[in-house]
Structures are given as C-alpha cells and as structure tokens.
Amino acid sequence: MPFTEIHLPDLLHFLASRLKWIGLSLLAGMALASLATMLFIPRLYTSSARIFPRPEVDNGLLDYTQINANQSMLNSYIALIKGNTIIDQVASELDMDSAMIQNSLHVQRDDEAAMIVLEADTKDPVVSYRIVSTTLDVFYDALENMGIPSMTTVDQAKIPAYPSSPNLWLNLGMGALAGLLFSTLLFCGQFLMDDHLHNQEEVELLLEIPVLGLIPDYAALH
Image 1 (cartoon, rainbow, N blue to C red):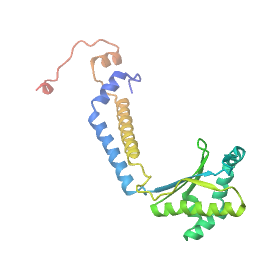
Image 2: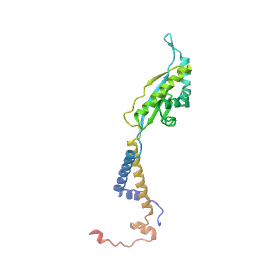
Image 3: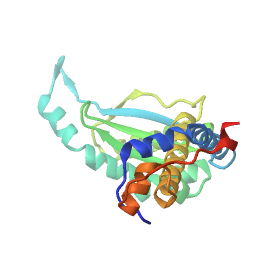
C-alpha cells in the first residue's frame, strides 16, 4: 500500500457512504438471532421459592441468639438440600433421574434477606414446579427427623406461565450488535486495503511533484 497514514475523516466518509449496507447487516443480524432463538434455543421455565429459618418464640419473645445462629447456618442448609440424600429422595418421589434434578435445581442464599432461594429450570413448567415443591417437602422432613429448627416458606413455588429463557430481546440486541460490528469491520478493512488514487492531494503526496492540470471526465458529467 502506498499510504500507511489513516485519515479519520476519510474513513468516516467512506463508512457513511455505506450506511445502507451497514443497516442491512444490522437487520440481518437481528433476523438470524430471532430465528436462532425461536428454532434452536430450547425454552426453559423457572419455578422458585424462598425459605427462612424460623426462630422459636418463647412467651412472645424472639430468641435473637437463635436467629443469628440460624442465619449463620444458611450454607449448611444449602449443602443439605444439594446433598445426595435429599436429591435421591426427590428423584425417587418424582420418578426422575437424580443427575437431571441435580443439574436443574439451583440453591443459593440471599444475603440481604438472610434467606435461601431454590430455583428449578426445565423445559416443562410443571416439572420445574414439582422439583422445587418436592425438594422443600423432603428437606422439611429431614430437618424434623434431625431435630433441627424448622423453616418457613416465604415465597411458595408456582407453575411458571412464561419461559424464563431464552431472552428474545437480549438476543436481538446481540444479533444487531454482531451485524453492526461485522459490517463496520468489513468496510474498514476494505478502506484500508484500497490502494487507488482518489484525488489530487494523494497524487502529489505519492509523486512529490505538483499537479499541473486535470482532465475532466466528460462521460461522468453527462
């Protein structure tokens, strides 16, 4: 290439002259993302519940020592829920595979509210609901058998009415961004690979001599 210096105004003008193709690439990216979302990405339904360690009340008074102890045991409760004993029993009651339940069930703590959140996402909304509700029942029975203070269900599990995944609008935005970046990089590469002389200034810069005259293109004028 004769020229290694990149003039930003020339590059912007070059990209502006191809806005139509950039816009078409953006729309094409959105269309591909929409098709992929509807045809190839499976829809998942999420059912969730939140539980809270219930402190004992003695003569109308709460034992704050027990409250703090229960909150500090949230990680132990989570480990118990995710353990093989609970998972295998849930799988047995639902007549499902333990590995499938292990992969679809997500248990985590809500540090701000000091609660445990259970979520299950599967392709069937009823299955997601049954996994969460059955896991809670089995977990509560296990706590009762071990003599551990009981839990309170703050938010009951429900059958989800709409899929939680995939996110169509997010995928459309990512497709549009991918189309925009692809077309912009493609035209930037075309601009950088262009070694033609376009104007008088480039000729003078290349030959290092002044231009004495120009011959007009009469065919282009008519």
